[in-house]
Image (cartoon, rainbow, N blue to C red):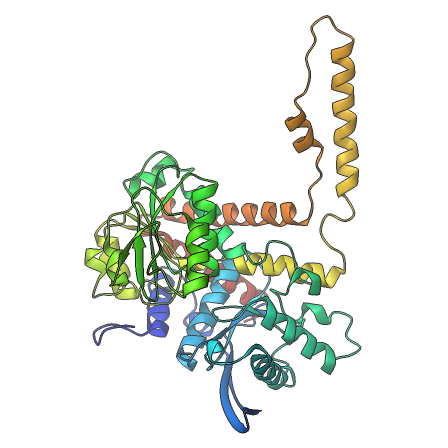
Length: 476
């Protein structure tokens, strides 16, 4: 999705890496070691379906093993290719380093249209793909841990986990071979919403800093801010839902495959999601006006633009017409290197993908830890926490009863205060803390170094520095 004058996705990632690495005092050999992809495995396998043999091509790329296991999603799409998978694996390396998840970067992909096959056929394809990767140790709790990505979800991860168990019957940690599983199959509460929730937490943290908002020409809070979301898949839907329902933002536009729907008073995300599920698109949605050419809605006036689908949707052909003062990259690589330069010069602030969509890998990390510890979060401490809070509430009510001035604690306060944190609350707390910490690390570089113009370079500087330290500690 780039013009002849524009670099490919992989070249864009390399250019952004090089721009940051040139500002660092790294030995040339180490810089190149961090930049290049360690290995990419291509597998071609046959599956007999509908009376004939179909051959599928899949990839698993390992970008960096400075920490192991390596981590990265598996996407199902007809456009999957080696360059894309390698670029995404590189982004995973830097993303994990930025949020301090102890993983190297990896990525996988299978050239398949998941909508073209029945569920039982897709299961056969997935299990065979998993078999090819597992027998090469490209899926393993201690070496390579996939997760969902575009075109995959909990269902596919459950199939992969089961396939690993069948091939490794005595591995007690087999559930940790993949993350993003359903909660009943070793998954964790909050994983499905994690990337969209991370986008919300990233924006909340940005809006805590008046100096940062000023750079984008914004002020106040998220309440009332006009948001346009491109792609209402898992990430875009949850980001739009949380921003509108919890932060009071107005989602004024949603762009999908068949066009876009707009409503300046704010779209009802739940109703729109139901409409898309029923009809396959946004056309005919009564809560907004339909725009045939959805891509042009990227150029509409808004406060925050959230590209949450494919890479390269904001490129050199449309960057100059983008009006949003703040872009948060919920997708991987939605802004090309060429477009990034145009937008920076125009004063647009971009919250980069390696930070903005790191919620998924952060909660995947929590799931992996849960699988290795064999106990859900909150199980040991929840009731003890409630009992401790109850002691305080009882004492306060006793004091009230023994004084002339009578007062009572509201039932709502007591219910909220006495409720111990379960797995979902702990996951959200951990994710919020992670997103805040990573933003602070980027922000410190952004504001303290005069040669750093934007958050993307700041993010790369933090990430590359951490990867470099990991390699140096290995003696490289």
